[in-house]
Image (cartoon, rainbow, N blue to C red):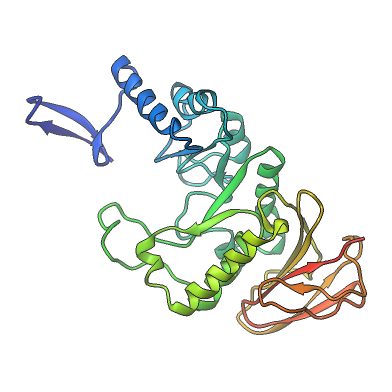
Length: 317
């Protein structure tokens, strides 16, 4: 996305990148200006940067990683726009271990694909429940190394229409499925949100209310934060159902999450054997409020509508 542009002030052409001049890091003046800009923002207490169209290049590492970490001592959120856990067709994508080794502290849980995330892959059949577990383990790898992963709700971007209303990708039942998308991705400890405000304001009132309710639930419960541990709970096989247990870093709270990825209602049965979840207890329904169905044995069933889910606070041994 670069081109030569003419400056009437300088009476010369310069290399432009996207909407402004591109920096040549081989020129001392340019390198000093990048450092000056970073230090200006870091002096305000800023705790991180995302580098647009960032490239993992040892020549850039000084500015992307070393300077932000050394100039101020607060924890840093350092990431590249295109860095993801799963390499794809994008030549700038890299796997999670490469992101970690380079010094990034966050990356996509899947990859930089606006219209595809780990939720879209499970509901479209691109992956099954085993594939989803493998995908969510990317967030586990990040957490275990003091990092995080991120994902957007599906959105569309085009540099020519980025700030002009245009058609964004949607789900077949957007008001329901986008809420479940939030419950899966944010509920798994992935940093998650809406990609474009221009899209968000066109969501229905009902969608926004339920979507916010999911995010409020996640933010209000330590067992749903990125710092909480995560393990899969057996819940059948195939594409349609999935369950996991999350426990807060201080072990004070445990949440059982159960999902029905099918368009029709289903009874989903999970096997709590070996999970440490106590039977003969009544769980708290964190998302809907009140109590969930009592857990009377290790084989536990819940009734879920199409694309439904449960976020249940449970007792542990």
